Length: 389
Ligand SMILES: [Fe+2]
Image (cartoon, rainbow, N blue to C red; front, side):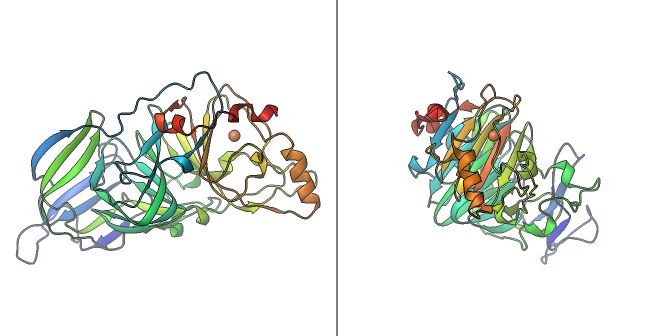
C-alpha cells in the first residue's frame, strides 16, 4: 500500500545474488498483490520461506454461524459485556459479517501464536490498551486509537502489554486509503484528512531463532497449522510498498462544514464492498442556522455498523448507547438522532457549546450484514423502539 519503504539490508538491485556473511545466499521472497500487477515488497530471508515440515487441519475456533438480520431491525450490541478470552486471533468473537467482511471483538491479555490470514487484509482497531505487533516485516507498537492494517498473508503475532480490547475488521480483499485521497501515482493529496507522515510502519528487521515453528494459516477452506522448519521471523531486510502499518484515529484531521457534512468526509479506508470511517472530536457545524447533528437518513444501499470508541454521543443520548456499544442500522430502516436530540443540541449551541467529543469507527457495507452469536448474546433488545419513546 502506501509508499516505498526500505528496512534493513537489501541488495542494490532486485533479483541479484545477495549473500550472507558466511557466503551463502539469502532467500528472496516477493509478497505481491493482484498477480504481480499491484503493490509488492521483496523480503530477504536467512532461511527458505518455503521450508515446511508438517501441515495439520485445525478445528475452526470461530465456526460461528451468521444469521440474517430478521426480523429486520436496528440493533445495539454491548461489546463491553462480552467476556475476555483467547488472544487477538483466536479470541475474536464474531459480531457480524457477509461475503466481503467480518467484524469481531476481542478482549485479552494473552499473546497470540503466529498467524497468517490468506483470505484478505485485516484492519484491527485497538480500542484500549497497548500491544506489540510482530511480523516478518518487523515490529509495530500500537495503542488506543490505532488502526493496524495487516496485508493479506503477513505472518504475524500480537503481544499485548496488559489488557487490550480491539475491533477486528477482516476483509475478503484489500484495505486501502480511498482512491480519491491519492494522486494517480499514489501520494496523498492536500485535501486528504491524513497523509504519509501519519502512517507508522516497521523500521527495523525482527529476527528470531527457532526451529519447527507453527503458523496458523487461514484460507477459504478453513484453518491449517503449518510447521516451518525455521522461524519465519528471519528477514534481514525488505523494500517495497506492501507492509503492515498503523494509523491513529487521533491523527485523522476532520473536515468540518458550515452545515452538516455526511459520513464520506470521515472516510478513512476502503475495502471490497465496504468503507471504514472515523468520527473524531471536532467543531460543530458553524452556519448560524445549522442543525449540527445528523439528519434522519436511509442509505438504501448500505448497512451501517458503528463502534462507539469514546466521547459523548449527543445525537444518541437516551438510546442506551455508551462507549463500547455497537449500533447496526441496516438498509430498509431509516435512522437518525434520538427524539429531542436536535432541540437539545440547538439549546447547547445557544449556551456556547461549540464542539463534539464523539469518537467512533463506522463500517458501512454495501451488502447486508448477517449477525453473529456473540453480538446477539449482548444485544439490547429495547434499542429498536427508542425512537418511539
Ligand atoms: Fe447513519
